Length: 610
Image (cartoon, rainbow, N blue to C red; front, side, top):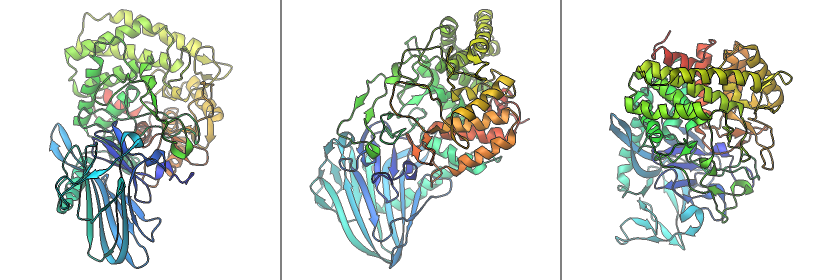
């Protein structure tokens, strides 16, 4: 606990692919946004113990109940064993089977259910809704009289329950004794009228079956298969049902340093995850979701704006909202400010173009289905990079400082040109200026080797003229810019482990001055990418050792935040999609244990195993 806050990675993550809820170890839902992932947090105790609302549900006498997900689901099961009785609870956001194009359909209802197995237990419930991220306490009405549902004023929330609740100011509460065989159910609907409590049994069965059927479609049985399957489930839970977009995380302002100011809103889609997500979905057998995500990505690319924004809203909206500071929230463990919106949306990040084109090439290699009009939109962005790669940008880490010539941005600009050249050939586009692109790519490649690698440092560096390191450059061999065992890449791995490490296998992304006070923890995306880079450098034993260490750092429910402090404290927004993506990539590379990135090599073979 930190100032009364549970550890970040102790929260359970629930999803119906439309929104998410986080459940604290004591049974309180402390984060819930409606009507979708990026909406108003009506429960925000995650960010303020005093004014943030919560949906508390507690069995007296058991301060640390046993929790787990039902296998291959996002259904949380909690077993209580206080003196005098036992009970089991199930918490979930209801889902059901959809159609072939949309296999999962959101039920738009949060279900909380407890059954007493033996003896007697005392149950305490308190439901305190506070709209606009805790700014406005919300009263309750019973529009259909005493036997009807409860409606939270000014919100889309409707509650049906067989539990006798009383109103206390702006909260609903109950305190009662239950005996063996008793079951109580609370169904909190958002944007929909929830069913009556007896329907909870069917909702539990449907939700469990839907998640398990989705998981069963995955066909990976190699190294770390259980971890890969669980991470894939988390990623599916972070995918928005309406568009297929991947949410970076369902939270805002969880701190990268406890008590610090590095607190950002991650409820958006970042294009830097594009290729890795698409490759992972296809490799794990989830072709429909992979194709849907690619279509979302192409739609964003077809927008009239000339520049690709590094992040967009999960509905495909341009994420141009100015950041807003929520002064009424004290922040997780006093970490201020709490922000909504993300100013990085307006940055220029040339790496974005490389990730998008990499995803498009992988999709076409796997399916042959990239359409002419889609290629037309992508070609426009290749031409942009051919013209602009010599310009500085803000870089992949969104450093809020003057633009620089970041080496990662140059490498990913080369990826954009390389993938554009290859797509033009595969699609037979005789009008594409391929020879001009090839000249630009060759010049760019030479420049990166000349100016991006510092022989005195013995590593690729953050930016031209800098001697600072950047862990994003562990991806240099993963995107095919250099072989993994190239001496320059091997020495870069060594320097990163020497100078960016805060513990075995735990590396920061950079240590350069970024204009903000304080410092971050180890960046888990980069930690798992270190595993992949070591595999490609033919250091398989070291890679496997670090992977096993990182697995040991997962939260009690197998979930990862963005970062980790040296003492094992989880930091940053949670659960973090790209951490789970990088885990999948690392496991697949360890399984292949070759000198090529397993996912890209597999895509080039058209999805066939060697």
